[in-house]
Image 1 (cartoon, each protein chain N blue to C red):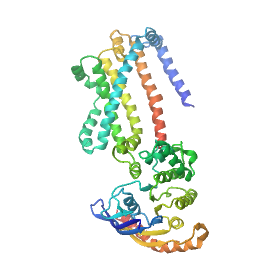
Image 2: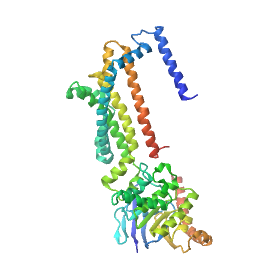
Image 3: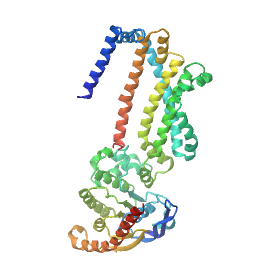
Image 4: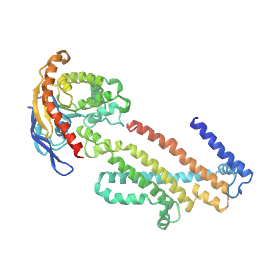
Amino acid sequence: MQTAIKRIIFFAAIIAFWEIGSRLEFWHPLIFPSLSSVFSALVEGFQDKTLIYDLIASFKRLAVGLTISLIIGTLIGILLGKSKTADETLGAVILALQSVPSIVWLPLAIMWFGLNEKAVIFVTILGGTFVMALNMRTGIKNVSPLYIKAAQTMGATGIDLFTRVIFPASIPYVVTGSRLAWAFAWRALMAGELLSTGPGLGYTLRYASDFGRMDIVIGVMIIIGAIGMIVDQFIFQRIEKSVIKKWGLES
Amino acid sequence: MFIEINDVNKQYNDKENRPVDVLKDINLSVEKGQFVSILGPSGCGKSTLLSIVAGLTKTTSGHIQIDGKTITKPGKDRGMVFQQAALFPWLTVMENVTFPLKKEMKKKDAEETALKYLQKVQLGKYISHYPHELSGGMQQRVAIARALAMNPETLLMDEPFGALDEQTRSRLHGQLETIWTETKKTILFVTHSISESIKLSDRIVVMGTKPGIILQDITVDIPRPREEHKKEMLEIEEHIMKYLKKEIDKVVSEELQYANSH
């Protein structure tokens, strides 16, 4: 059977179970509202534009946070890749920081920046920076020595060698790093909004929860998941695939 | 003499930190415009020697001069072709060939030069292709065009056709011969194929292994095209085989010893 057909049957079964279970009151609607009420909450949210404002607000923060994290991550990664001393010292710290969920920085961020947008953006930046740095570092270290030798015989040295050969050769890792940075930053942003201020998808989620509106909570969760999946599958995976093909890394 | 290799030694330390001689007392001079093959079994240091001439590897002692200048680093006077094409996958064929020309030429001039050499290797129609869209033989031809585009005096080739199938290899032999006759480059051609070296070169330098030394310097005096002189080619092949047999046996017995002791 084709994947698409399998998926359609699978999702149809879940949806049917969800809706029928709700209608027959297998569980209390307050604990888990029906699909149709989630759907109407979403329609309502888009009609009165609150969800649209939330989306715009969240994406603005993400754009700022992710851009900064990609720039800082790339610079740190290049430093770690080129300098052995930096790798042995700063590299160990980055590796340790990478395993700390960035949301635990929020208390400090609120202390430094106040309970505002800056604190959320700070957490988002931390979410993406380290994973980008580590991928960039691996990319620089994995550049085929053959490319470097070939470039040297053609007169390339120093900065020229770096910008024309080493950096472009590590683009596949830049793409993977960006994809992971996006995923981490997106999670960090949602957590940050949930725990601090709005507007934003995460903030609306908590607001709805305070009023016991589980239909909105589930609706926003669906939006968060859908955006995550769409950006990953339709943007990053496509770029990654074409880069892997072009760079001759297909196995 | 155009290329002078004087008392070149190269040592490196193995895992137990004992010095190993890769090249021992190599002396070789090559005339301008000569096509010289460096032939030997794997591990004889022939690629290391070429890499030293390219300026990519340092000698332990001794030095190399080209046209009176001592080699200290890579330079555009020596074009290098590796066993793998080493094309940059993010650049088109045209951009790959203009890579070494970017600094000293205007874009238009660089592209004209590149096209001239791409046509020489019959790839004039593939300028906007990316390397992954080409076969191995085509990639290697682009690499040759790229090396030639710098207009180097010397062309260094490190088993350039080693990874290709027999038909492609034999076609490229023909193209390389034509290019050499037209451009009069001095070519150092590293190979482990006896027939390839006889087919292409004026002179064959046979190397032995452990340590890497020059065993024989053979002049190949067969008129070109050489396919028409099968008998003479065979005579030289048998002559070289006598020398190389001992060396290959040495490599094999050492590998057996290694396998038995581990």
